Length: 201
Image (cartoon, rainbow, N blue to C red; front, side):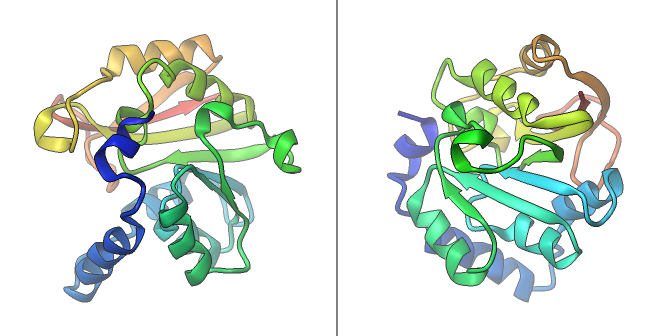
């Protein structure tokens, strides 16, 4: 069972969406992830939203002209995504089992985005497998950008993955680190409890 399942029971989709809707209504910018993705690849590029949740990031990218696919294991989150954007492709699947061919989609993504603490919330021991499967879905030169907490202050679960571990999984999957930020607004990373890492195949 994933840490996400243990934390939420996979029934929190509407609550999660409501929280971000309230943030947006308060005037807070909730599109930093999409903005960073757009800085990495041009409109029209193929983007895989790995752990897409309620679709907030992917729907924004689709609005900006990206060709997007969303994958998540949580049916309650995907129900919200499908209600908000029924014409976009949403797939329910554990990322540890992700194989584009099985879903009838091409494995030539320009970018994979994993926002929302995806890696710390995976089932223990599947992190390297997930990195490998996501890397295999990238075209040569494609990017994977992942943001996640590294300490208790930035996570809803105990910390479970370090940056050196994540970088090692990426290296084993044929990915090289090209940038690291402390926020999705691309502030420099100088240590701290949250990092956004950009690796390239």
